[in-house]
Length: 104
Image (cartoon, rainbow, N blue to C red):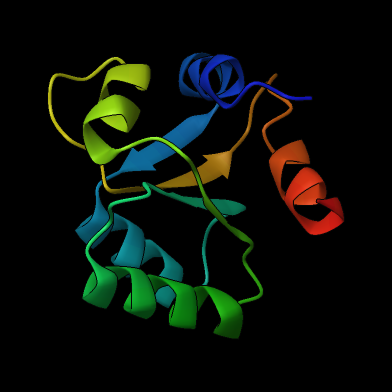
């Protein structure tokens, strides 16, 4: 079982991650990104838009069990993060989250 918190911290340090729902929407609308992570309490209208564009661009999405406050703290920020885009996972194994979600 992969730890979202640990792998996200590694991706933040060694890869490239874009934080924020508006930035995520902009990025995914241009077909960029390797993985979209959404907080469990991401606003439904924003979540629907992001998921729609992600499906069009074949970018996997993962709805994590963390709230936006907890997701922000995991990313080392003092603000809420409802959505984020992993552009480069770096040394992390965060892409395995999608595999586990598909299997489970």
